[in-house]
Image (cartoon, rainbow, N blue to C red; front, side, top):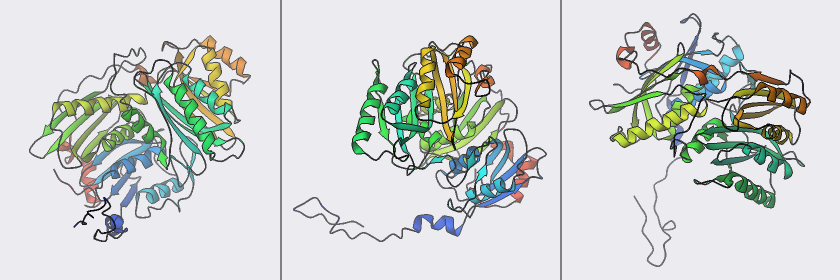
Length: 473
């Protein structure tokens, strides 16, 4: 059905006779068949099984993975098919025993899917989370998104501009990859303690930050934007770097600290109409979130998958289609997906020395710390800046200006310059992931959905019910 166009103007809306759609229609399926969550601590000796039955809508898999990831939980095995079964344990390889955490997961994923009624819980890393896990409330802060060409000292320049304009950085995350940088900064007005509401100040902030991000040699361009809604910061960083095409490296980037490279292959299953994506790489926290996030934002639907991350190597197999039902029908498209998945996996791999700063929060702290980094010839490759109550808990990964390891004597000098003790500036060696050996392609199918149904764990999952991703091979 449609409207008739007026001959004297372009406005069709006033004369259109559109059918009425109940605004509650979109949630009708979820209300008729609400998600069902089963949490079992008996099936596995050292892990907790979480089984989710839900209608297969676009993004539902990412939502499940995101909830578990934001609680600092590690998914060691996962089967997604006509049933969604999740073997999962935390980063310490222990079962879930905290009743409030179990209740939180059930509320987040199940029929009681209400973000306003959840009680606060703490993650295994000690972070307090509540009804907005992993989501920043724009009503309390002003979110600024930055992308551009990475260079030593860039974070110092950005934080100096914000400090000079009376902005207090409450939280920030910075990722770098292939000489590109993406940053989401949450700031408050130093005077009011709330978001930046003055239009003139907003304009000034955007102008100066844009000049900083452009630098003197930005061939691809830079962007500075104010975010206008609730967003998961890490997913937003993936989206920003994807939009900035960080997966396209103009020239080979020398990364001395990273030897391993993901092994990703794609083949089509013509008879069933799927494209099969196989990923092998060194295992690390949040790996599943990064790959599922990328496939979802590239408008692919995961119909079936197996995940196995026991040991040091992670194996992931996805059966995917476009949202319109097509599989990947060209070699160019396959190569693009491979490059994008490689980039998504590598973005979170941090080169350099890990420095964790814990001290009382104050306006200008980030500017002061990053200035000291810059003056000592250090470059920040990744950063996570967070304010917990009145404490600043900031994590930086640093190298020298050329990307080489940092001299420990420089760190000792910085300690003295910051006038802080050993307990406040902690040093961690380069993550083992960054020094892992190259991934050798798997010979033969070590795991696949073809052998999945033969496993004892899968038979157990099917015994729990037949709701869920009701698609079959």
